[in-house]
Length: 191
Image 1 (cartoon, helix red, strand yellow):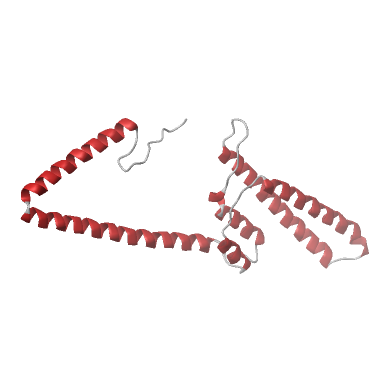
Image 2 (image 1 turned 135 degrees about the vertical axis):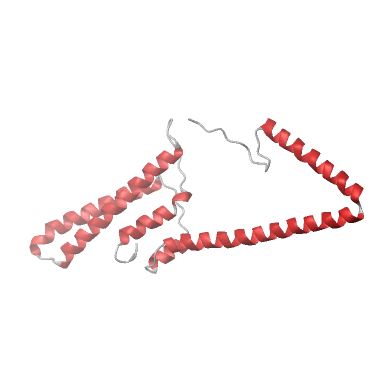
């Protein structure tokens, strides 16, 4: 997708794909909501592609207009209006949230993948900062325990025994309740 301005259908498809995580739909009957969302999204994308094709045909008809092309022009206008109506009806079943930054990038003729790259880079940077803080606290804890062990060896040993007992109890409780040691709940895979 090197030149979004030259291929507007790719830009629209990319924007829809970039917003794929914001899909929300309710499935009918035994249908899963994800399947209904994907089907709805596919129908809207198909309608967008068809509309772009109709706009291209309309552009060709208008650019080479003469009296003989009056009827094809009206037919293409009617087809465009009908497809826009279909697209609107299909879009009512889709709840896609596209960040304004993506829309602005497309308006500027840029690749919407830049937004995804920027978000990922931001997450990586924040993750590194958080990891640095976590490592600093672990280092501080280790240093404090070493200093306390020199000053109060019996109390530090009692503390370590209490921590070990508490950790073992928490692990046993987590296993019996189906939770992971970090507090997350185990999810059974459905077949």
